[in-house]
Length: 370
Length: 260
Image (cartoon, rainbow over all chains, first blue to last red; front, side, top):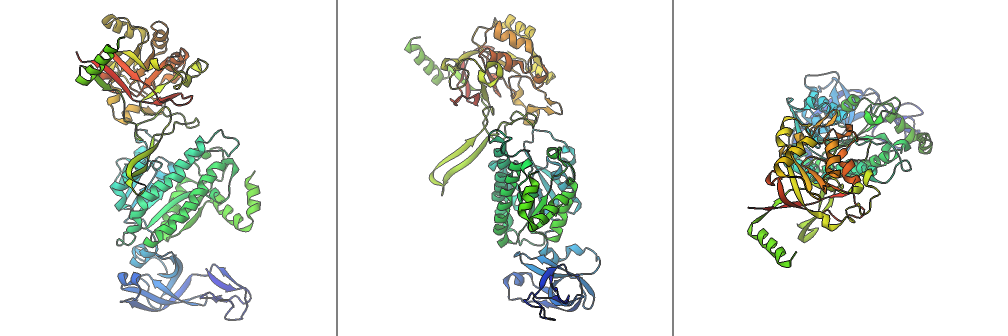
């Protein structure tokens, strides 16, 4: 995204108050064409910044964008002077958006570039913990992460004495380790962290506890309590057990700890009364995720929130389509990690709510009430 | 009884002449709980959360907050637990007579049958055969069903399959008969529940709950160490927590066994 003048159409960078071409003040941020050419490159061998000093040598360059501006960018190793590049903004380890230039088109093992991996949380070569392997989303996530080249996928199973559908997809598979984990239980979470906490590079929180109903159609608080135990306290248990070691290992080589992923209902942003108490539990988790993101940042570990509408699972049986396929959620996890994102909206419902919330939150509240 | 006899009992316990057998599983989050279809309310699992452990939260002391459902771990069922006992007087754990918390037990060893068949059922003829050997079951005695189920790993212990749990228990006829013809004070098992895993399909469903609680009798489940008890002569001490209007509670169950 760059600023573009609403009067003359010129793109501007860095951000400014008035268009450098015509002095118009109408400079809105829009998606800009990403192509450019690498004008010049240099390698910083002894950077003054402590972060880059440890990672030197570090390549940067000047990119002349096809749309006009010239930008300083971090360079993919395969970028060649004079050749076309594709630009993107990436979140660096401090959570800051920075320009990154990659070669146009695919090069061999393109995603394995050292500087690119600093900006992303690619599951390739990494060890991942998927917290709940009982759910379809959890099982799809395991498969997708494995296919994306994760070295090991640990998959948590609560109450291992209870058989579950899809168990054979997890047990005895190469690179998949089934571990006992009940995230809602402080002790179980701490016990697992004692075992594997030092080697979880990516944690994918697939806790799923969906129950219909708001306030008046329920009796008592036991279901609400379960929702909070599973989603909110489960989140806290996982964060306290795994967060500190992950934050500590954010710079542990090319396969350092990299990211924490939450799958949240988009109704965390706007309550859906048909699943009203569930929405509230998700809102609590969303708030907590912002706290965790800030607390993980000093270690350079990212937090990715995936917002979904109703997923095509048992507890949304009564909800008419469109629903998100669990596999689509799993694929979004992988693509979000590969892109180093902080936020993703998966499926039409989530995307629509995001847009409507930005336009008119009160109208959205009324619509969800039906 | 003379006070002297009670002191003799205490002395016998101290000397080991009377053994004290613990029939209780450790209460913790890993122990299986009953699984109902998910659309029904569920028993809250056992949770133990540290308040402090000689640390900044409390420098000299260690203690926990504990939460659990009434029917978790080794636990007691009071008559109010079942609809058949809902209108009886003193039917909850806080109002039941304290004297009912101590009673002798008859232990029926069905471990061989249960090893053959997870759906093994105790029947009237089996109890009659036991009586032929050990004598008639006296009134106000516990009947404890030994299956050695407590020795299994948790997965085999709960033995859940697509159609529910497959664990041994009593059939409907023997429960009615034990309550009405023998006047037992209660029925105890090693499994999760006094009823068999498939007892929901019996007539009436869950006959142990149905007949025991309907007659004001009690249930004990998730017991262990029943193999250390004699067929007759052990005395069970089972005093549930005094939970207000409670339907049951986890508890420590001990048996006094004469060593001779």
